[in-house]
Length: 236
Image (cartoon, rainbow, N blue to C red; front, side, top):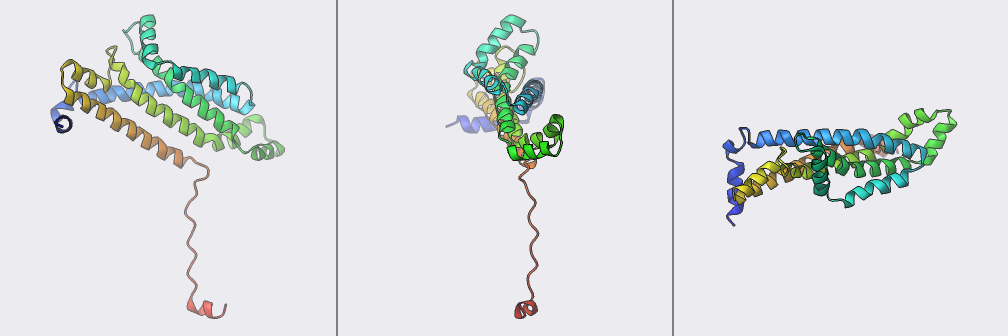
């Protein structure tokens, strides 16, 4: 297959990485869309999920409603938002990505809050902690791995879905793919798809590392016990 070597040649050509339509420019646009959309989704979903998980009320309804969004195609939402808001700004794309990122954030955070060891919560309550103190000192630290898992899932999905931003003319790595289609350049299309895949895998790895770092079960390696000397062994 000539597509693979041709795509590799396109990726290794420095001329394709610079300029207004270069990879670096498109990568910056892609990361900007991802960061803004993920930040807004976190600001909306995480507080709601934390409060509902802390109270233990209304969470199932919120999670089920958020999961309805997964059944709606993101491209369909994007088209509707462009019709409603116009294509002159980035907001239709950002709002579509936010709606796509909310379900995993809301679901994982709520589940994490509800799966906390209730004995630890009751012990904290018995020590006289207020609801806010229990939330900050007990519940949030224990639920943090679940929260990070939701953020990781949402980030990877947003990175992959942000490729659709190129269809209404927005920036991002998807513009490389659409340009390849317009130019009947299969190697360029494949190269754009490879770049999106690499970025998604990189984001997955970074957030997976962060998730492990914040895990409360992560322990340092136990100190090695000193070897017993021959003299000690003889008189044991």
